[in-house]
Every structure is written in C-alpha cells, then in structure tokens.
Length: 341
Image (cartoon, rainbow, N blue to C red; front, side, top):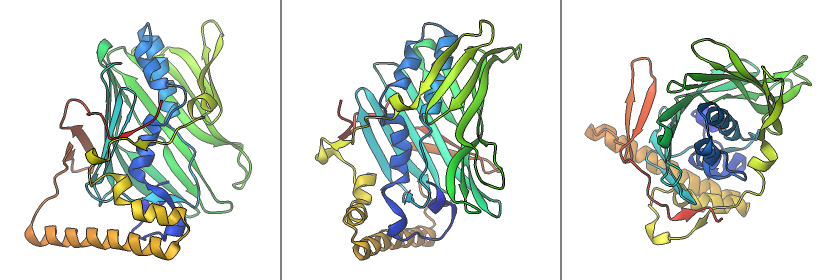
C-alpha cells in the first residue's frame, strides 16, 4: 500500500490502484460493515469501552495488496466523506516527507478522531518495512476519555516469496481510565520465509498502575480475534472481520457543486478512469501531467520563498522529525460524498 511513498521512483499506472492513499486511510474509518466505532461510545463501563476501542483499532487494519499501490497524494490534496452522522476529512499536509492528517467527528455519538500518519521506510535486504510514525487519537467526548494508539507497520517481502503484511507492536492507552493494551501483529512458524500463520494478532488489556492483566487477546485480524477473561476463563469474540468489512458500499457523489477541486476523486479522476478502462498510455500521460504540475508549483514556491500552509490542519514537527497534526476546526462539516445507508 505504501510502496510508492517509500521511494522517489514514480510507479507506472499499471501498478497503481485507481485511488489515492488518502482514500485508503479514509476507507479504514468510513468503509465498514458492523459499526465498531459507535460501539465504543455505547459501552456502559470504562473497561467495556476500552475493549471496544481495541476492537475498533483492529478493524482499521485492512488487507494489503502486493504489486499494487495507491497514488501518492499531492500536496494539499483532500478527501471528504460522510457516513451517517460521521464526517471524515483528510489532507496531505506534506509531500516530502509524505504526511497525511485525518479529522473525523460524529456529533450524534460524541466521537472525534485525529490522526497523523507518516510512513518511514526501513530496508532489510529482502524486504522493506514501512514504519508508520504518528499517533491516532480517539476521543469519546461524552465520557471525557482520550485513547491514543499506534498503527502496525507494513512489511513488503521481496524474497524468497513476495507479499505484504502488517507487523509490529501497537500500544493503546487511555490515561483517563488507566487502562492499556499491547498488541503484536505477526506471522508465526516461518521457516526460510515459507509457511506460517499470517495476519495473526496477540496481546493483552491491563491496568497501567498495577500491570495486572485483565484480558488476553488472540486471533487473526482478517478473521476472528477472541478475548479471554483471565479471571473467569470466559472467551468471547472481540472482533469479527467478516462482519466488519463485508458488504461494503461504494461512496457516491451527492452534491457535486460542493466538492473541492483538491478532492482526491477530482485530482486523480482522469488517471483512475483510464486505469479502469486499461488505457495505459492515457493513464500515464494524465499522471505525468499531475506530477509535473506539482513539481512546477514546488519550484515556484522555492523561488519566491513561500512556505506551504495546510488549509485544514496546523502542523508541528520536532528536531527528531516527529510530526503532529491538529485540526483547525472543532468539527468536520457534512461532505458532498456520502456512503449510502
């Protein structure tokens, strides 16, 4: 998914999905079957809500396709979609390095999401690992709870077999309730790169002060993940991927007059349509026009000393090259693109 963002090499359209990386980020939030996000806001106790947040975090992990990559978003590109009362807005706030910001609000459920994603490549000879820097914040405003979590990393294997999978450690913390979770995405029982149970996740939910484990987590994030109460031994289903990401509906353009020219679907429309039609020459020419326009704008900004300022987020980064994105508006307005009920 991130392979194009990890190199300065421009992939030919033959290897592109007909969508932008911003759309892929957004789909992890609004393309859902069973609504795990709303379950977070309906929990009767802090522990029930925390377990729901863990399930929702797992639900944002989607299968990665090897050999196909979305378009690298251009600087200032946006993606704005609504699903019911949930409004989602993304903006590409930096191009070099690639940094994407997300803000989503649901006034009905009193939920807010703020993400900042920056993929950083690590080369391991026969593989490339995209380390996803930045934090995800999920706020349950009704309960005054803020959950901070990481994203797993994308491992792209080149030898001896090709493939892409999510790996690494994910930490989920809620300082307000004192609960934490540690998850590990991994592939087990591997010998010389072959075999193994892929898409596995294992972890625990525990109290941050006592470090006492409350629940153990085990399963496969593309199938079933189970939750075991360590005190009673009771095992329940925490997450069911079939319910979460089946029966997904394609977003539709409801109000074209309100769509911004920076919208991903607008920026990449000609390229995407050519890819769908398998008109590779036309797709290549359209993509080159977009990239050359961006290079020209970059040269003009550099010549005039102009600094790029994102429209919807404030961006800060430290000397350690850590990035943080904060939305300028308190809530996200309804979008011209909607996910049908």
